[in-house]
Image (tube, rainbow over all chains, first blue to last red; front, side, top):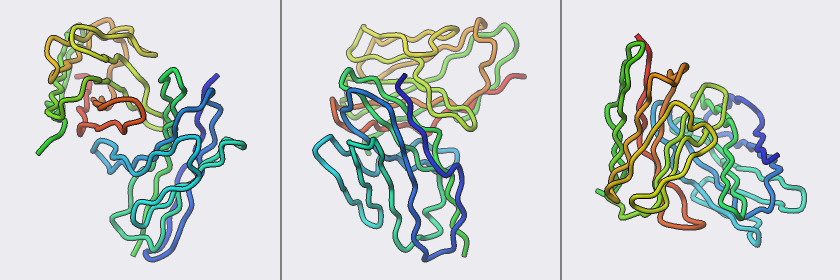
Length: 111
Length: 112
């Protein structure tokens, strides 16, 4: 069964600190993996998208990594800001376009 | 500005009533999607449409219906057959394979 598991469920960090969010998946055959940021009461916004051949992709202070062998991805946030407080969602697509969403990690950045 | 517009932001439904959620996009995307988001769960696909006048059921289509008469519009009707409709509904569109989805800001549906 195609599934996406994210950890931790929630995380609290101090402004300026770094953090790493995890995503494990069983989706097969793998096509691509995306990370989205969702502010409370808003729709998700795309941060990165990685295909099988890519193992790292950056978008400003956000860096996503992908290990297709172990079926794991991480999202690293550098020098966190208060505006980074949001839910971060991992989405994995199979080659038949079946898309599976993780439940998200709720990040709170405190001053 | 290009994007997806969902309306209304909040919607209330009485028992036995059908309600329709609006989704409009001006991104010229062929594919459009409807998702339901419940606390602590990942988004679940209700319906999707790859092209005008065609749509397919997603994982949780029971109690919902859609239409795709225009490329820009993909309304979702929550029928009285949907027994647990309280949720946050998200509409999305995509420009193609391996392209990110663009989401609207959602409609929160509650039962009176």
